Length: 87
Image (cartoon, rainbow, N blue to C red):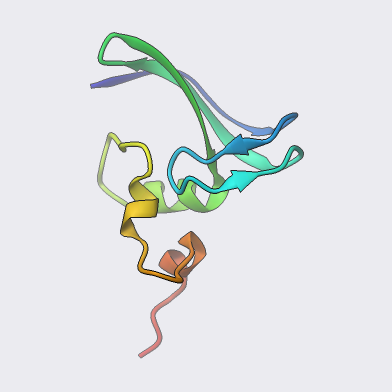
């Protein structure tokens, strides 16, 4: 179980890889920063705002690294997962 110590939205000062979709983002990008303890280890991660929206739309409490990446079909982006489905 993860314990959150700090969670906030930041504008990055360095390039970061999103914890959830594994895409690289340049400095100056708005990202969610999380610091906590997971399985007795100190952890810190950055997630892009698209992945934050995906996480907030689920009932899950914990997310493994790259979980959004694993949800994608070939040629799909995380943004495709949050688009309304056309009927």
